Image 1 (spheres, rainbow, N blue to C red):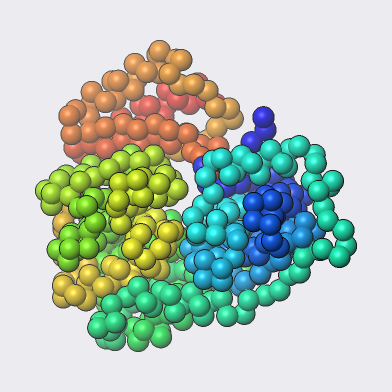
Image 2: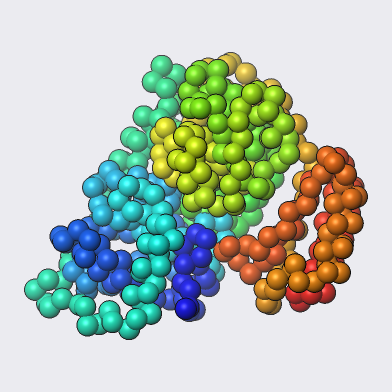
Length: 450
C-alpha cells in the first residue's frame, strides 16, 4: 500500500506530490469523515502554519477539504507547532493540523495532525486516514450543500498561547534585569517569542523576525546558532535562545558565547527537577542519538535514563509508558509533560531561565553538569534506500570504525524519517578518532547508495 505518513506526519517538496493542494484537500476530507464517524457531531478542526510561502496554499486546501466534508475550520495566525497542540485542547477542538516542515528549508512543507488531547496521531489513526484517501471513496461520502462546514479565524489564539506559556513560569520569579537575545529563524516564533519576553520584562534583542516566506531556517535559528553566539558575546547578554522554524526546538547560548544543545539542557533541568522533587520516578527519556555524556551525567545524579527511537512522538510515548515528566533530544526538542504534551522551544527556554534565576548561577556554570563527548554527524544524500545489513563488506567497515573508537565510543547509522538521507553518527574519546570513523563509514556507504 502507498504511504503518506512518515515518522512525523506527511512531508515533501511543496507543490509536488504528495505535498500539494490536491493531497491537502483529501487529508482534510478524510480526517473530517473519520472524526464524524466516531463522534457523531460536526467536527471542529484547528489549522495552523509556520511562515513558509506554501503554507497559505495548503491552508486553503485543507480548509476546503474539511468544509466540503461537513467540518468547521478555525484558522490561526502563524504560530509554533506546540501552540497549535495547545490551542486544539484549549478551544475544545476535535483535532489540530499544523502545516510545517519544522527545521527543513522553505521548499519543503508538511502536515502534522494532533488529536483532541494535543498529542500527535498514532500509527493506527494515520493508517485509517491513509486508507480512506487511497480508497477513492471520498467523493461519495461528501454531504449535501446544507451540511457544508464553515471557516473562521481565531484572532485571540496567539494571546491564549502567550498566557499559557506565562503560567509555566514560576510566579515568584521575574526576568527583569536579564538581557535575552532571541533568534526566531524567521519562523513561527517571530511574533510570539519577542512579545512574551518583553511582557515578562526581560531586556530583549530579537534576530530573524522578518519572515518573507522563503527565509525560514536560513542562516539562523537552532540549526545555525553561530551568529547568535557572537551576538550574545558582543552584547554581553545573559543568554541567547535559538528556535527552529516551527518553534518546537531550543538551542541555547551561554553568556560566554558557548552553544548549549538539547542534551545539556536536559541534564540541567533534570538535576533541578530532582532537587525540587519534581522529577517523577527519577526518570528521563532520551533517544539513541543522545550524547554518551548525558548518560554518564544522569547516572551520576542517580537518575534513570530510558532510551527511545529518534522522534518526539516516540519520546512522548515512552515518557507516558515510564511515568516520566522530562524527555527529549539533543536537537533541542524537549518535552515537559507536567506542562505540555508537545516539545515546545519557548516553554523549554522558560524552564531553563527558571533554573538560572532560582539557582543564581550563570548558564555556563550550570552546563558543567555534563561533559560532552565529541560527536560527529554526517548526512549522505540518497537516491535509493537499501538494507545495509545485506552488504557484508560494509558491515566490516562499520566494525573497523567501532574498533577505532574503543569502549568509550559508539556508531549509529540510520535513515532519516523525513528526508532522503542516511545519517551517520559517531561518538568517541577524541574528535580526530570520531571524524576518522565517520569518514570511513560515509565513504563505504557512498559506494553502495549513490
